[in-house]
Amino acid sequence: MRKTHIPQVAGFWRSSSSSRAIPAIRCSRRATAKLGVYICYDRHFPEGWRALALHGAEYIVNPSATVAGLSEHLWKLEQPASAVANGVYIGAVNRIGTEGPWNIGEFYGQSYFVNPRGIIEAIASRDKDELLVHDMDLDLIRKTRDTWQFLPRSPAGDLSLAERRRVVRHDSRWIHGDESTALLAIVKPFRTRAPRNRKTRRSVMRPV
Image (tube, rainbow, N blue to C red):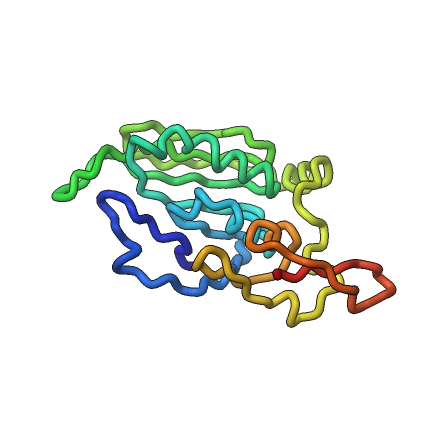
């Protein structure tokens, strides 16, 4: 997984020095859960969380280096909301302290685990180096998805391989991965065409 959204803010100005690559949305299978990674500034954009979840992610880690100021009040809002919307555990990771010679501000720490119901189950301190260890109830993922059903059960469904692998454009950034109505809906207006497999009676949404 590569970083998708490049911050253009004081202390970074990365959009002028980094290329906007086409990220391949991938998850890796670990011993206990399927892991996805969404990097730093990407957390402000919901489509990546959804794409990872549609690829099977059960636990998504968001490593960040963010300072007090505009983003701090969002720190405990965005990841819990994304955990709920996608029925996943999220590990929100942030560093502490300051860093010279840039001195762009104080990194406010407070790394935490949030469950699929949006509840922060464990959180680290704001100003101390800590190792946060926490047990996750993976059964809660299925229970939550079955109850709220915010995540489509079969996002690819009866679509052909070519349709599932379509690349769609979003605001001069590219998202590559399995197609879902939820993902396309926030990318471009779309129209409905007749389904390929008439037995399923499912319409396929294409961007205009």
